[in-house]
Length: 191
Image (cartoon, rainbow, N blue to C red):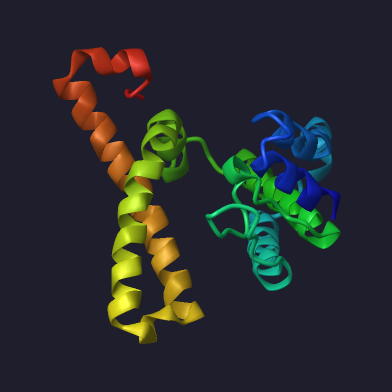
């Protein structure tokens, strides 16, 4: 529950931006670094274990973690808004999700679709808010006109599709910028 008080203090302006996330991330990062340092212990685990752990972690976050109302934006998870897990179980789920993602990417072969995505990490990071905001605007209009689409299954499906399309569009825009605008290399828009 201390995370909730930190979030409220940050939104009120008592804790500067960056320090709030550092307080939350310190033990989290130490856990992930520790797991990475002992990665040989997990080398024999099959890839499906990490995939299932990631899915279970996301499900547990959505089931047990309340929606945050400390700012005008409502989230379950968003480090930029300090809308992070308030419960101990949510925190453990978030850490296990990072553990699963880390080892999933350590185990896959470098020549794959995931390495292509990794090559364009910075363009995806730069463009994701702009692209996702457009998807959320469309979702808001659809739900306002047709309330039947406000059910959980549709929202989950729409979130997955918008996530994949966001990555795809960020890569396409990055390639376009790299080809047509020579100065794009200065902001990391080329892979």
